[in-house]
Image (tube, rainbow, N blue to C red; front, side, top):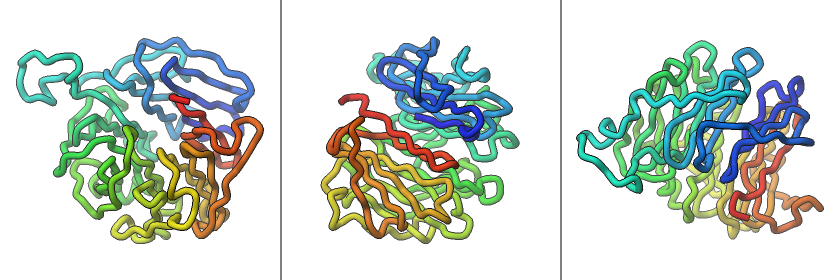
Length: 310
């Protein structure tokens, strides 16, 4: 699920899943299915930080290419230059379709996209792909350690610090400080179980508070030193026993200290920076429903996506 950065004005939300791509322009009250070029399951999507001006959305499927729309989802184009199979395999031998390396996990626009035109995406084994020309071509960035299920979190201050964080199913935290050209290991949180990548979110005030949250073996883990060290902050809560934790951090985090966690056993929220957690219940989804992909927009509206498998 991806919420427009100017939701208060345009009321726009995109939602992708196994059965297609959907769009709401009234704050989620009504949804319209969007015709796309891609038939595979949508595993990640993102809305341009400058959506009110460029109407740009990107989606990646389980196997395939990035697809970009520059008219709010009305039309789509595959952006595959630089992602040809020989570039991954380094040879021209044919491969079985089940061995296609272009199995995507995550995609993210640079917070400074309107100026730097940069987009990041992650693929199955130990690679990030990066475009600096609005997706018209891509470069493959290999990681130093073999990992799967890579999650991407660019710094909100990317225009200045050029920093991008990556997590993965092995819980190894990578960081780039050169705009995604190179990544190095900064710490290890611990392995997460399941087929999904862990969740990784970064404080909107990262330049001053150096705060990140990630899902890990003890539930939710927090760093206040730019990812160098991590503290398990849900050891004595029901979150520790939950699974497939997906996080959303408030755009007003400095003031409200709010983080949400959608899990396989309901949704939780902290409003004190992770010191205490409250499990939410509602008639729309019940207390223990499989919920994931929470989102919080700048006006404090909270959105929840039900599991694609539940």
